[in-house]
Amino acid sequence: MLKKTLCNPQALVGLFLILTLVVMAIFAPLIAPHLPDEMNPNARFAKSSAEYPLGGDQLGRCVFSRLVYGARLSLGIAIPTVAMLTVLGLTIGSICAYKGGWLDRVFIIICDIFIAFPALVIAISLIGVLGNKLTVVLFSAVISQWAWYARMARIYCKKEAAKEYVLSAKVAGATDAGILFCHIIPNALPQFLVYACTGVASMIMMVSGFSFLGIGLPTGTAEWGAMMNDARSSLYSQPMLIVWPGIFIFTAAAGFTLFGEALRDILTPEDMTI
Amino acid sequence: MSLSKRLLGFIIVLLGVSILSFALSAISGIDPAEAIARQQITNASPELIERIRMEYNLDRPIVERYFSWMTGVLKGDFGISYMTHNTVGADIALLLPKTLTLVGLALSFVIIVALPIGALCALYHNSIFDKFMRWFTLLGICIPVFWLGFLLLLQFAVNTSIFKVVPEPGLKGYILPAISLATPSLCTAIRLFRSSLLTEMSADYVAYLYSRGQSKSRILWVHAFRNALPPMITLFASYAGALIAGSAMVESIFSIKGFGSFLIKAVVARDLPVISASVLIIASIFVLLNLAADIINRLLCPRIAVKEDADA
Image (cartoon, rainbow over all chains, first blue to last red; front, side):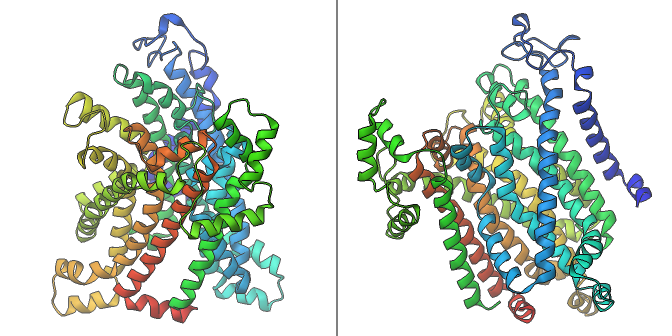
């Protein structure tokens, strides 16, 4: 498995991008030449130089430093949210897949109801309840996405539950919980983690999309989407202020997508066609 | 599942959607009576707020309010907007066509481009074209819609003035927004159709057609193409709903005054009737299109219905 991953160019490119991002987030104070909110009136719209690698923005803040610190926010929001969704989805999905019957049917209907609401719609409705805070982003991500994760987990677990070893375990006297947590979930986990890996990419894009619209994070935050929103007023004179954050969002999302899709090819070679 | 069961499920889902749409606005910390009062007079007195509460029946329990809202909705009455003082139905009817034009254009762009390219990828499987498209579409999924919108605006409206920066009348003004809205969906669609076709091409009936001496391209275009369509129809239906919500971003970039930007404005103004109605409309369109996709799939490939009935 490890060897296959290391021989797959797509997985390597993805892994490289993810690691770069993680290093950037952890060692942000060492990499960034300035603090993200440090303003220098002389650096307003500065050209790129040794001191300001990607120039300065409309308030004279270092664009490169803000982008580097932005990695902390993007990863810091996306990864815990997806982890939460994974646990939630796997628990609900696996129980419904294993139990079946009316529980399963009710579950499918509830999933259908939640899937009908796009995340953006839930987010903007929740602002009224929670105020315009980061928690809005988290809650709306979980409320709008849990049904997708649970449905995916249900499909994987259903496939696993139909296999003969589950029947053998039952005959041998294993408890329901034992079968669920020792057999079905561990076997369905790898495929599900691949789904979660590509989920991180869409979560990164969702968070920056929200902050671009001014949802969740206050304007002026060193977040990629919020930076693009700040740069809108000077779109025609300083287009690079919008181009750079976009490149960072794109690269981050591409890292997780490339790695996740490559892992899927390795895990399920029969689906190699995808 | 038989069609009648599916219809029953559809009604239950729609009911759940309406409850959730209402609940989303009802649980908000905003006091609607206060919001209406402040629209009229900035420093509204408590007496005025109370009078409005009685006038709009906001002192009734939430279940009762849901039913009176729902009876209104069924008659086409979504209440009155706090923001514009027009009926919500009239406001939305004015703006929805713009957004639907944008989404329709984006969706037709996805369909027209994705199907031939996906088919070519499957036909020349593992060729350079196929490999290039695999990387290209994978990366295309990762392009943020709002960023692409700006890049297109910079390239085609500023650097070369093919389009104007200000919204143009007619369909031309929708071309750039539709392209930026469609691109990520287009890439997913190409990948899905390619894989759906490749699965079809390994089916038994294809081996039979080969043995009868038919060419690969004929089998693919004439036989496999149609059988590979159902997952695509389901995908297109679920995109339509997501694109309506996603249009809020694109409308804000290209300054189109549509449904999406109206919804964002309503949230800023805390206009509860507009929020509930918009959420309900978006979610209902999504559910309805999914049902339509289901029915089309059954008509297109009767074997799906047979297989599902056997599973149930």
